Length: 487
Picture (cartoon, rainbow, N blue to C red):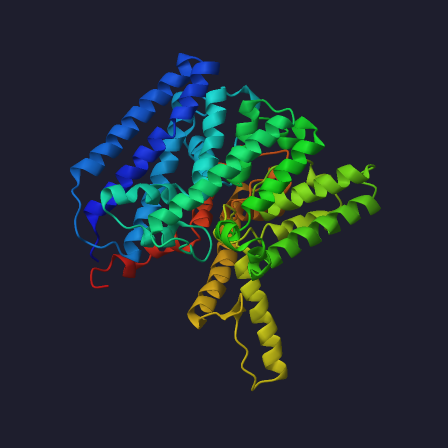
C-alpha cells in the first residue's frame, strides 16, 4: 500500500498546531480566575504541541503524491487519537484528573461531543479546566479536521478525501467548488450560531463564562456543563427554551442553512431527512408531554412542555444536557428516550448517533420488503429527496446498521465483566457509541462513569471515537487488505 507519508505528517502537524493554539482561550480564563498552578501547565502544553506541529509541517516537504481515500482513513484516525491524548494532558498536569484512563475518557468525551463524564463533583474544578473541557466540544463539534481542511491549502494539499473519512453522516456535500471553501463556510455558520446563542443566554441571566460553556455544549451537541445539575441548575424556562432551540438547529444538516440563504426556507421542507427529523422531534415531545401530564409527574403544564421538548432535543441530537431526571419519569417515557438514543441528528450536523438519513433509508427498505412480498414483480427504488439511491449506497447503510448493532452487543458483553446491571451494560455502550452522554442505570442523568474500571473506560473511549468517525474509519484499519501493499 502506497501512502503519502510526507503529506500525512504535514497534516498531522497542522492538527497539532490547531489543538495547541486552541488552548489560548483556556489560558486566558486560567489567568483571570485560577493562577499559575493552572495556566502554566496549559502554556507548557501549548508550546510543546505547537512546536512539534510546526516542526512536522516544515520538516516534511510537500510531495506530488495525491491523497487517496485510504490515506484519509489513516490520517483521520491518527489525528483523532492524538488530539484526545493531547486534550487529556491539561487535566493530568494540573491535577484536576490525575488518572490517565480518566483524563483520556474525559478528553475523548469532549472531542467526540459525547458528554459522558467520570467527574463526581464538576464544580470544584478550576475554571480554566472547565473551559477547556467544554471548548473541546466546540472544536470537535464540526470536526477537528474540517477546521484543518480550511487551512490545508497553505500546505498545498487537497482535503476532499479527508472530509469523506472524518465528517459525521453518510456524506459531506461540497457547497462551494473548493473543499477548503466549503469548510470555511460551515465554520462561519458554526461561529454565527455560537455568537447568537451566547448573547441570548446572557440575556437570560447567565454571565459570559456560563453562557460560553453551555453554548459550546449546545452547538457542538456535546452536553458538558460546569454545574453538577447541568442545565437544571439555572431553573429558568427561558434558558431551557433557548438551549432547546439551538440543540434542534445544530442537529440539522448544516448545508441546508447555507442553501436556505440563497433559496429561502423552503429547502428545509424539500429535504426528506429534515422532515423525518422534525417528525421524530415533534412526535416524541408531544408523546412525552402527554404521558407526563396524564401520570401527574408534573403539576405545571408549562414545565412539562418545556422539559419534554428539552429532553427530546437533548437525546435526539445526542447533546446529553439534562433539565430533569428522566429516570424518575414513567417507564414508557424512558423507553421513548431509549429509542431516541438509536437515532441521532441529521447527516452533516454536529450530532452523533445512527443519523436520521439512515433511519429514513432503512424504513424504505422495510416498506419495499413488505411491498415485494405482496407484489413480487414490482421494482421499487429507494429514493432520497426524489433521487434514486445507488444500490451500493443502500447496501452500505444497511451494513452500517448491522455493524452498529453488533458493536453494541460486543461492547455490552465486555462491560458485563464489571458485574453491573444489564441496563447499565447496554446503555453505557449505546450512549458512548452514539455520542449521547447520559444513559440509564448507574450512568443516568444524575450519575457518571467513575465506577467503571480503567479497561472499560479505555474501551468506551474508543467507542466514542468510533461513533464519531462513523465506525468504518476505525474498522478499515483493522483489515489486512488495508495494509496490503498490493491493494
